[in-house]
Length: 68
Image 1 (cartoon, rainbow, N blue to C red):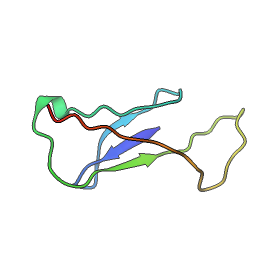
Image 2 (image 1 turned 180 degrees about the vertical axis):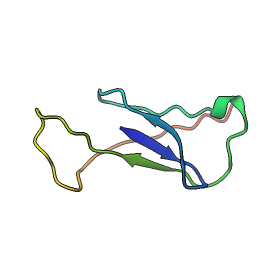
Image 3 (image 1 turned 135 degrees about the vertical axis):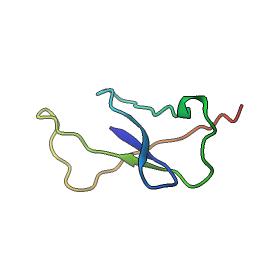
Image 4 (image 1 turned 180 degrees about the horizontal axis):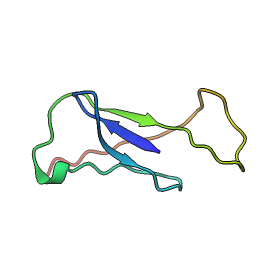
């Protein structure tokens, strides 16, 4: 699961497709997207077929921005 945290500190978008890779697409319903710092939170998931990895885990990701 991914959560996109906006400049105000609350989640503005999320994704939980139960597959990998996952993506968050944030358009703010066509309104201007607020300037500021955004954070992405990668949440672990509980799956009985995957051994637990502890409180922290490794991941890799990327991001893309389209300003048009």
